[in-house]
Length: 204
Image 1 (cartoon, helix red, strand yellow):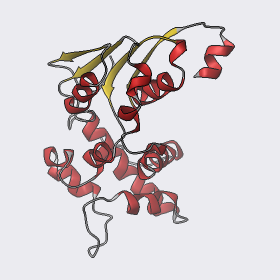
Image 2 (cartoon, one colour; image 1 turned 60 degrees about the vertical axis):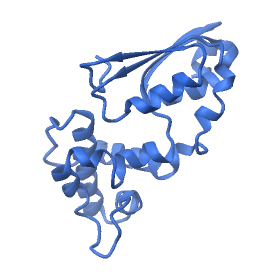
Image 3 (spheres, one colour; image 1 turned 180 degrees about the vertical axis):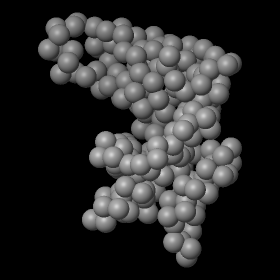
């Protein structure tokens, strides 16, 4: 983002991002606070362990979609604990067994799409290189805790304490629950939280 700003010769700007884009936007703002005029963050993903587990572990969003979760965890060996399947998916998606990798990518896309669409997602019937690469990237980041230290974004929020921000939260967003945005607002004096009662996780 900073390379783009320099290339376009932008002195200061307002950054918008949603979900993972909100994570990147906030991380950028904390690294370059003097370049910021403000932030608009739609959906707050703080990339903490609990946020990642909400998507991919027992006790999280799976409680809304037990049937789809069962399909998502069908790759897990019977002897494995089902508390967090990320490690197994990481092995499958990055392993040398191409057929297993594509099957895992299909299951990953189906589960991810289910959560994002509130259960209305029509899962693809066959995999592709694009689908596989997308699943690999998502799983790689989650498996590595998004390459952030635990609670890093909240711990460094003082760096943008005076930067105006609007935190937009769609109440039906199951990817980024209200708790994260509320916690961010409580620790960010210049931030305002706007909750959209009927909204889901999409920007449009």
